[in-house]
Image (cartoon, rainbow, N blue to C red; front, side, top):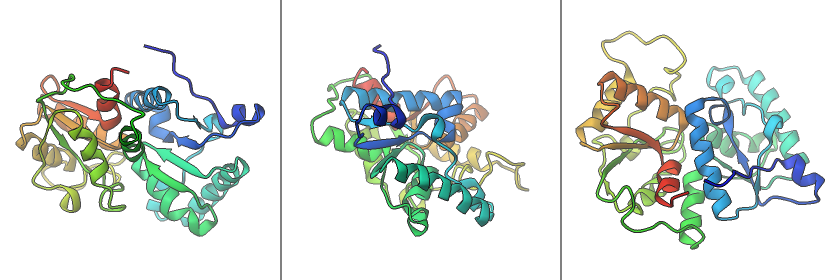
Amino acid sequence: MSTLHVPTMAEMMAQGQTPDILFWVGCSGSFDDRAKKITKALVRILNECQVNFAVLGAEESCTGDPAKRAGNEFTFQMQAMMNIQVLDGYEVKKIVTACPHCFNTLKNEYPELGGKYEVIHHTQLIQELINSGKLKIKEGGVFKGKKITFHDPCYLGRANDVYEAPRALIEKLDAELVEMKRCKTTGLCCGAGGAQMFKEAEKGNKEVNVERTEDALETEATIIATGCPFCNTMMTDGVKNFNKEHEIQVLDVAELIANAAEL
């Protein structure tokens, strides 16, 4: 495997260069060991396609999404304004992120504070790279004939109406895409979007990620595809609840594509 090339905005500016796109990594993709693998998969794709990108590195901070969802508008705006100052300082025009929470906040909530950027999800960028011929996937690859189901992240699907890009990528794998009974506009949250990943369970007889995993198991898929690092954690825990971790993989779409392209 080749060495990953991940330049920072500061390094590129020092060299008099301007990247075409900023990769906003997010907290999970930066610090969570499982999510780091998703980050690396996306970087391998960007490197393979010679995408002119950079990251903020140590200059990247939280988007403020958790504060806003918790109702702390003051903290959110303080956080957002600091980020906008950094982004505008580098004259960022286009941002890609593998986190739908960051995607939603940067795309929909920064503009009213003056932060106006073109923001895309990593599945949309990968779809562009394949459609333009920059990324090739070999026919009959490692996922040929396998059943794959896709769990729609709330902040990608219902919040931003992005349903087709991840599905189009899965269909490139020569695999069988099987839908859960609750999908797309009627998709069920895995719980992460409702902060169940970070707090004690609500009253009831079942965790929401367990119920969502039941939807996935009903499809008899051997791979649960996700497009969000937090969904990945929730679905992975759900699979473990049923002791199915040796039978069913939970993988991000970027990991599926990177593996299929043998990157």
